[in-house]
Length: 303
Image (cartoon, rainbow, N blue to C red; front, side, top):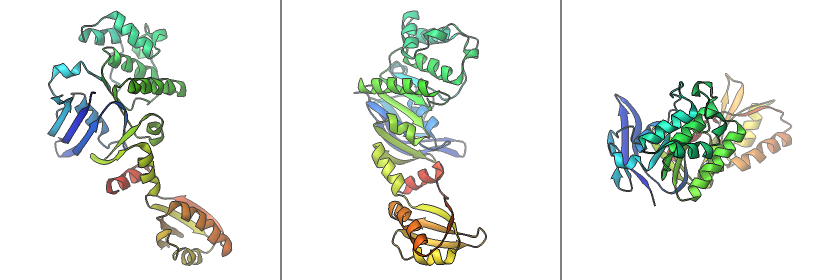
């Protein structure tokens, strides 16, 4: 059973802290690393892959340190987010070059290209590839030595729906085989479809951990804020404020609206139209004011 242990790991660049005292264990199966853009996901993956040294703490593979330990690289495959590739090579040449770094050859490269269904374009220059094709050839190069650990940074970027489904099926199979698969994403629905376990990173900190149902429940149960405009804001506020589903209502004179914090999402969504109907109040605007990924993930830090 292959596991990556991250123990009180921090990484800073000058005065910027990218990862802040993160502790987690990534084991066999498919794990989703979820967080908004700029949360520190790529930095964390680079430390797991041996590309970056932790500024503090340790990252180990089955108890062995990963940084500057060539022996563990034979068990790790990495698919980076960045686009930098050797565009003058064909897809096959690129994967063969990576195979040769592991003491392998063209046969293993061909097998990896077949696994990601890139045989049809293997003799084209990478410069002619779409973003989705580049992602798949990077995947082939990461799989060429059949690693027990696969680390993928935003692997679905640029893929069309069919390519996404193919890659998801492949990752599910690898997880079912007992390999340790970690992929990062900032899209919850993407993670839900694939990961049996989720780790959430926000602003470099470890915000939450568990299966996707628990993470989804945390997100749904968080306080929701709404901007509501109506034909009679003050009467509506007076009717809503006494209900336990609301934690606070503010009359925003500048916006000409109410700012409402709802602590019981299901009850409030039923309450608002009923109260408006009973008091003959027309609802002109009902819009969430805190639905950005950043606000959702920030709530998880304190959850």
